[in-house]
Image (cartoon, rainbow, N blue to C red; front, side):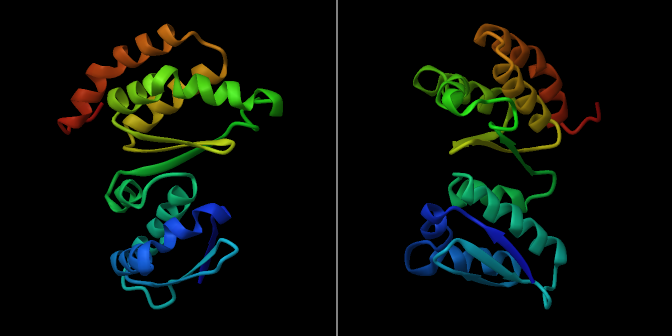
Length: 179
């Protein structure tokens, strides 16, 4: 048995309309799931046919809790897809500057977040005091570095150049060649 906590306002997303999302997650991972109204999700994995799927389910639930839609979070059931969460408070963000930092990552009209997603091939969610990313073992470090550059005060143009510079490497990796 494993437990994962999600914010109270995300409990409804984990459960879904008439329990639909919870059933889909349970079916995909092959385990029973219980969700309470406080945000505690209990995964009964003691009889799991695939223990790895039960572990991946934990990341899927964490991703939903960090603002991803269940559809985007399901990407974590695929091989070579991982979840990375950056706590903005731990990354040096003072409480009175967190909204400015979130704004830098999102960018004007969402442009910066969209560029990171498109060029690195990841999904990004800014929720509360965290930035969560779902991506491959090649794209995820690129996206994380771009976000860390923004957190450290790099100009947006510098981050965009970095992402553009990584594009050939990412394309080679997409074709299945080792780097």
